[in-house]
Length: 201
Image (tube, rainbow, N blue to C red; front, top):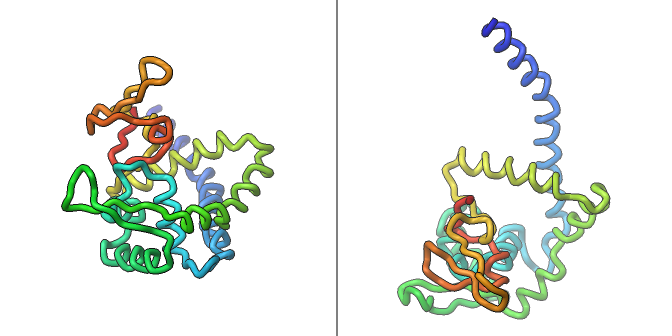
């Protein structure tokens, strides 16, 4: 009986595989097509990815090392990307207030203006249209797929702050939230940003 159940389960998973492969191909093609508007303002794909990360990361995670981990890239490659973005006036560096040996990255006004014209926003519009404005289920599925892929590759999740087990919501309106890991106050904007230290609650 156990062998029969196992056989049924295997046949079901095999029947699902063609659709899963098709979905993987669609995601891959969408990723490539999303770059069709690149270069915009002289930015290549790697530079866009760095800008997008810096636009979403909280103040603890805007470092060259965190960016390297997020992109799954080497420190040398990320360093070259950041040098190019600095030369173009999109990114600035400043000493970290928490560790003077490291630097914090920040978007300049020019960098934020570029993100406002990000080609990825056009795809977001396509997603909203295709899902009738109800993209929550799609986002949940993609988040689960991303989590499995990151875990398989031994990477960091970089999840949203408020979904972390260390996030402590403010006790009352007007008060700051709090990070139980880093022992730092968190603003509403921080709580909506992604963090390199995030662990699912």
